Length: 113
Image (cartoon, rainbow, N blue to C red; front, side, top):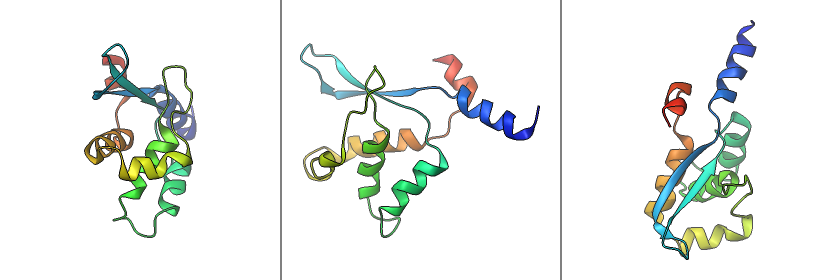
């Protein structure tokens, strides 16, 4: 098998990842779970182009908007939610979520979950 195919298979094996947000409870009192597919270079480029510099924390909101999915694989946020995420949502939660989305995991870690 070629190296590119090995690399593509590795990325595919990462699967869908998730993070439970205990602070965001639904109507039944259950924590919200946010899902996402691993970020690729194209998506990183989209997010980084939106920022004038890498110290702009707005990239965290942009990443969450780009990647956050519900359990049915539907996008949760749109560009219209950016201001709310920036000004009306707990920044620590957005940071935690964005950092989890950027974290590189191994296929072995995926299998453990």
